[in-house]
Length: 379
Image (cartoon, rainbow, N blue to C red; front, side, top):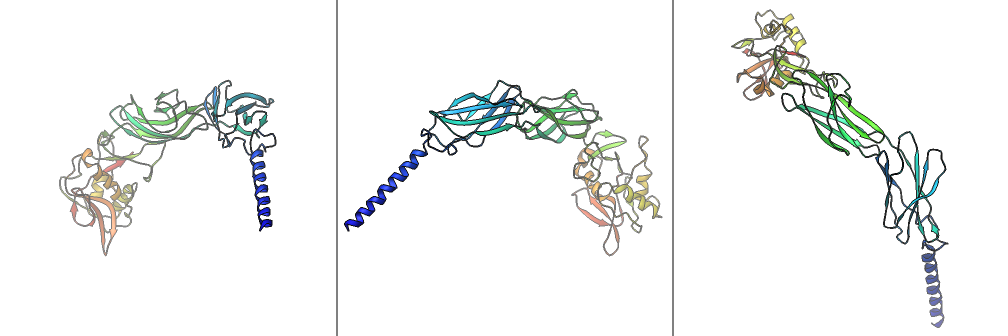
């Protein structure tokens, strides 16, 4: 029994000595402590301006006095002890150098406790231009518009200025008309002013950091609102990014004739070849197909093709998707009846029909007989 107590005491004493030594050697003030366990964690940085760069880091070991910071510019030697901060400071700003994306700068940070120094954590400042997008633009008045933009990456440098620039020429720059919408990253909305009605404008977002200026993608928009008079009729629809025929650098859309082609319903030809397109952009060819295979005089397709308004003669019967855009904007376009309207899209269901849309409720159905029709053209 006495022997067991002695053995137990020896083991307990050895354990105390072991852990005591480990605790002693893990103390930064002990010269024998390994220098890697208490070095600063990874360094993050942000270039605040052309003369300011902020470093920040993590420090888990709290038994230290502070941090030393070295700096190296281009191929010059390291400037040791360039600056120092106290232990409670986990960030530091260098405001004594002009930063540029072409001039490499490095920093290394290490903790100190009395005469002991930790290992150094190093970082290279890599400044790049921001990443941004010009997302959408819409008219807000006869001479104003609104543009939504987003800066998704500041390039490791604070965005000092942002906004949009616009012109009737492609690829507008900040030397053209532009807005100033503060600073920082993320989404923002910019106002566009003093635009000319019926003109096509090009717009790009811009962002500036210490590396320079970066432009977003270009959008084109027509300074005309749905329902306005435009090129022989009423502006009925402007193509969006998911529409067939959309071009980010151009503005395209649908113009509706100001009135129906007849005060009463008109007939249409169903037994023809082709004319099965339904998408936006297929109505013109559908109309050609219907006319070429139809012997019925004064049919809807022929009446649309024969239309002449203000020297514009390229009218046609809309496809069912094109007709739906007229229904959606019928209030702004005007002069529609609460009746069915022909499309130029044929549908086979035991026999050939043609799609119509009821302008009283928006429903679509394959139809034969005599209904109303409205011609369109595109720009």
